[in-house]
Length: 304
Image 1 (cartoon, rainbow, N blue to C red):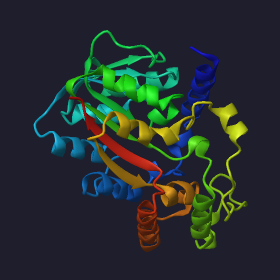
Image 2 (tube, rainbow, N blue to C red):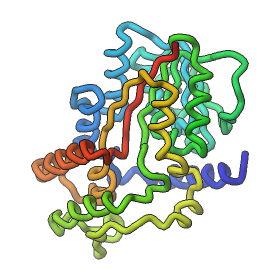
Image 3 (tube, one colour):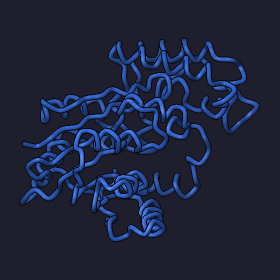
Image 4 (cartoon, rainbow, N blue to C red):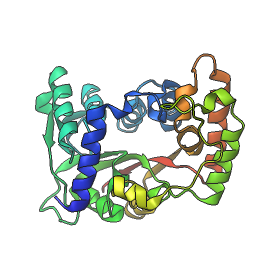
């Protein structure tokens, strides 16, 4: 494993070991936002982080079961496990560089009685290698493609891995590399955050501190030091997909508001008491999509 990937693996081992994401601070931990995103994906406000993916795949490929699927950067495999439970996938090959996350994934699969359907491998896939023959009916990327150092090569590898009639499904961050928000993104995100009630700007881990109302630019060098794979080539995901799958489906799912404006703020939002505010914020997020500012996207393509 390269030094770059070793640093990234150590980062994710530490985060998972500490239970970093158990506190409600990110959009994917907020059921209301998940329902909003799923509505954009499949037209239904479903609960569950993969429910929109499953509904869209079932609607697009009625009655189909993908016998062999692959997922790179699967984390603990909880998303892929849901595809197996739903009957969409018979077997997943799962690749992940974090040993802690693999241990968690194997435990989850065993608890569900599906360990034979989930083959975990702690290895970094070399996407520059051309496979000797196509191996998969489905290549599934869920918020992992943006960790690839060369997303064009990774997307090409995905197409090469697909059998004729196979499917690529991508649900991922497509925003600026290293999350270096554009001036327009920072202006809109900060304007919206500045309009929030003061109680929503409490720091989620240091209660006596306030979150900045003007969102700062990312310290790129610091971000690279923490995880050199984070959004390394993310802004090329959409161009790479549309070039290799010109007849594919592209569904922007937003994120400027729910991801950037509400980062950490989510801890202070009561989904019942603050429902009207949150709904308004999500409406604004939808409006930013029409301006070409979506940070996330779902892409589905077929191999001839």
